[in-house]
Length: 316
Image 1 (cartoon, rainbow, N blue to C red):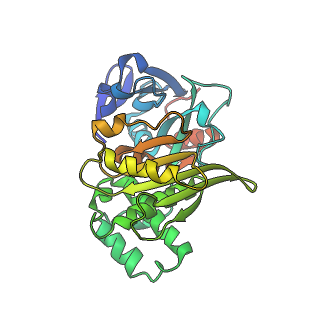
Image 2 (tube, one colour):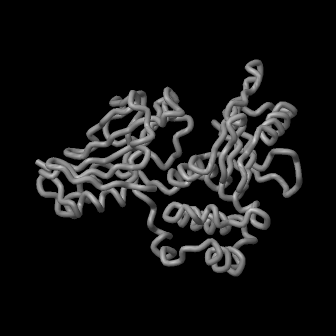
C-alpha cells in the first residue's frame, strides 16, 4: 500500500493512501502507546459502516527515533475491531490490548505482529510459480490434507508480504487454489470447513460452520470467484438461489473475489423476508482477511520490551 512519510517539528508520520479517501466526519485519533497516535476513519463510500481503517501513525520525536518509528510501522499491524464482533466473529488470533472496557467509536484497537516463522524461510522467493513447484506440486505433501493446510499457510504468509501473488494465480487453471485459500482462512478463524466437489454446482464452493458444542450457531455458504473481470449481479443471484433451496438455511452467504463488483452488484439486496445475510468481499477485503490470518496479537509487556530493545529515547 502507498505510504507517505512526513516529518514535522513534533512527529514522524506515516500516512496511508486511505487518509485522503476517508470521510472527514468519520476520522478519530487514539493514543495506542505513549507518544504513538493512530488515526482511523471510514472510506467515503462506506460512511456509517463502522468499518474503520488505519489512516496514519504518528510517533513523538521526544520519545522515539526515526529508526524506531520506521521499524514499528513496518513490523506491526494496527486494527480497529467492531465490539459487535467480539466473541462471535473475531478470529482467535486476536486478544485485546489494554482494558476490554475501553472502546473507541464502538470498537477495540489492537496491535498485531506478522507471523514470521515460515516467512523467514520463504522470503527470498517472490513468485506464485516458485511456491507451486517447490511447496505444492513437487513436495509430495499436497495429497495429504493435513500437510496441504501447512503449505497453503505458507502461500498466505507470502501473499501478505507481496499482494501481487494473489493476482498471479492463473484464473483458468488454478481457480481451485483461491477456494483453498479462503477455506484455510476460515478454518483459522474457527470454522469447520467443507470444500464441495469440483463440479458446477451453481454457487457453493465452501460450507463453513461455527459450533458451540454440538449446536451449529453459524452456517455460511461461500462462493469464490477468481476472476479478472468485475462481478455483476448474475453470480450473486445464483448464490442466493442456492442458499434459499438448502434443507437448512444458512445464516449468511459470502461471495469472495480477487476482482471487484459492479455498482449493480453492490446495490443488490436479499428479500428482507429471508433471514440470510449477504456479504460481498472484493480483492481488498480478501487481502484484509489474509492480513488477519497472519496477525499475532502481542501483549503490552511484549510491545514495551520491543521498544526498550530498539532504543526508545524515553518512555517515562
